Length: 368
Ligand code: ACO
Image 1 (cartoon, protein in one colour):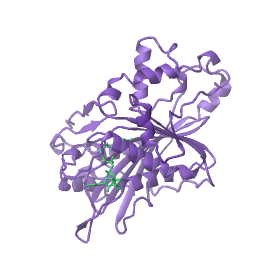
Image 2 (cartoon, rainbow, N blue to C red):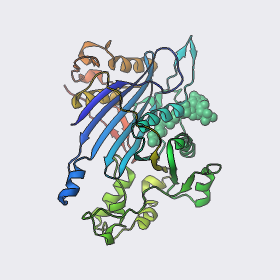
Image 3 (spheres, rainbow, N blue to C red):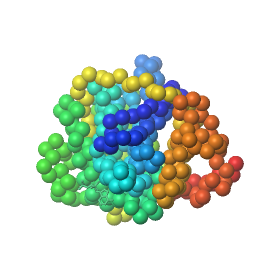
Image 4 (cartoon, rainbow, N blue to C red):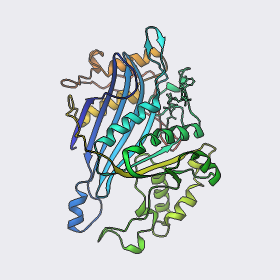
């Protein structure tokens, strides 16, 4: 584990007053997994992945969370926007419920990450796949939660990313919708001159000693793998069929349309942005305090294993994330973190967290 930090995050959304948005970050240096020449090994050692968990809360209520991974490799930086979710709660200002644009919040968060990499090549990748809930278990049961359908979500993310394109020099922005006709995909891109159909995973000449040039056009060498990523699952499937050395990238995109997670009647938009970020790098500000890897896991667990069915339960979850929480589950961001594992009775129901493969992962109840 290289670095784990938590820092106050300002700038997202347009709320005044007691706005808190927190960023929990977890980074780990990855190990090389195959034998490579020493000069490449040196560069591989620098491969790092950082997990960011942004949580937006207002006063005592959690509103929204966004999980993003940053991957570093010799060709640049990749931001994989993994999961966005809302609790359905609205901030109450002077007793009035106020709507916050989560699209603007998401854009502001990604913008903060981009600002750390001006002058560098950055790729942004995401899969727009609607679900009832991703990060906040049982929030789907909260009657006021607002959902977007597949086409709405695809438009939502396109609009969100389009607002970031001015941050790049000559960016490429792409949309792929497996199983959709070209004219359907084009209809999403009307009035957006900088967007094209396709994807950003273009053929790249292999590094010396990496893979033979004849193999470089195979999907297995062209496509990055992300956590909880439908592409990776299909690559694994190809491997199980012994087809990794024959499946070209064109075949891959053709065949992936037949996968259940892309043809179950729910539109999934695959989006990418690729370009060099403009301007001067803004160094990352020193975090207000740091969390160890274990502490980060605890924080993530509180967020993704609480029950978000009612406003009261959301307030409880928020309390657990702050110093005012009950002693057995206190997270002291400014000092030492001490969180005893929750007792079984604390977990009212086994939380459900969605993954992009449409399977519900029902977490085991804690027994200690
Ligand atoms: N009633 C009516 N309209 C509403 C409401 C509401 N309660 N809340 C928001 N809206 C409208 C907004 O006014 C806005 O309209 P506009 O486009 O005309 O301006 C539109 O809905 C979008 O509002 P946002 O605040 O930007 O987004 P929203 O609150 O819907 O949050 C999100 C978007 C996070 C996708 C939410 O729908 C959600 O939690 N969905 C379930 C989980 C999910 O599918 N996540 C996305 C997975 S894909 C990925 O993460 C990479």
